[in-house]
Length: 239
Image 1 (cartoon, rainbow, N blue to C red):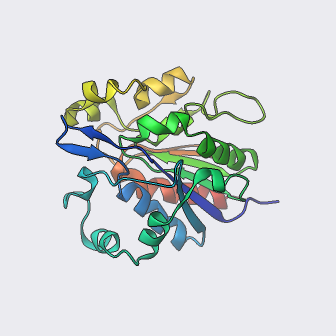
Image 2 (spheres, helix red, strand yellow):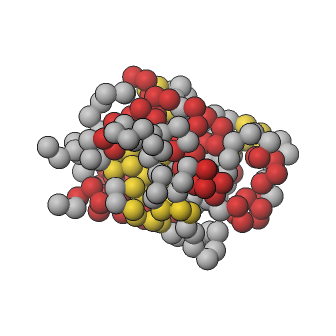
């Protein structure tokens, strides 16, 4: 039986000061909004969930340089389909054993904090994978793979696979690499090595870039959220 045309977008429930306390990291809004739009347009029934059912919007993601035009209109309209789903999402534990065919981990730096111990999100993603569905992530979303194992083998789901995600170079350009390493969690490149995956990246840290390895689809940065979601749909729809 083919996986259900239902998708779940994981959202970080963590928040933390960043840039020396000048900003707050949380959900990078377009990294959830853009896949929501792609998946909805492709006929998926889409849910959003964080480990706790709560979220904080990353203050940098609300800057007009990132959130503009129709994206800003959707964000500011609390009655939009996206905002209603986001603002009223359930904790992930309430969605374990739901029949999803596609799992997409959105991000924000805060994902590094809670995704490695987001056990209910891990369980949902593992179930999607076990049923032959697609698992995807973008930017710092690969933090979800820390603790996410293949139910059949017990090995890390990304072991032996090729992935991408936010670059160490990007962290340095943002001036936050040393700061976020104090959180005690591996950055994406380090995590890939830890879990036995091969890390790949575009020449530039801000280039639109994604990697497809079978049913695993990963994107490098916020600019890659749409192309990653489209690639995930293409993989899902392959005979």
